[in-house]
Length: 187
Image (cartoon, rainbow, N blue to C red; front, side, top):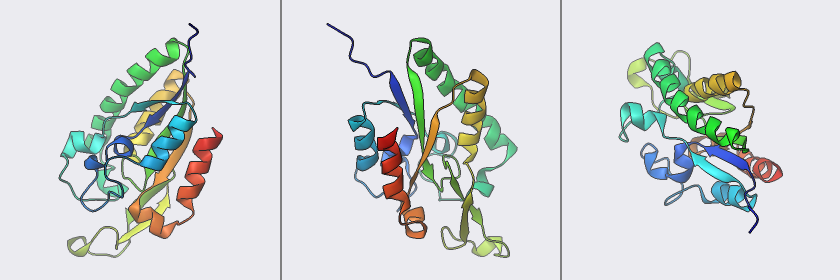
């Protein structure tokens, strides 16, 4: 019987397949991001789920924060070590003929944002800052995705990068979700 594998792999951030890893009040689905995962399945991708770097470092019960809260040397060091573990597995797939076609991240995540991250607004006292009220959404990658990208580049693995908007960013960028699904289906 012939092998039916597509040899195309999508690497998804943890919360795409397990919304229980999200901070309180951020989940829009009961279990997983149904439309995103469905689009990947329909397109014939194998799916690798990254472990959640935030829950590994801070646990499930944490507050939502922008990137500048996570962009610290000790967090980068932890995230780099975590990403190194993931890249070892991805190299195995590539060595056996698969292509790492796409990395799917969570927009506005301080760790897993792909094109948009949050940043505390200037001039707001630390003692009164509240997410998302006092956050500007700006272009950029999350800290974990930056570390993962460095390691993938070192290995010559060059996937497409697609960010899925979450609850906070959908309000700011309402068309982004439809555009994201379109990008995934066109890969």
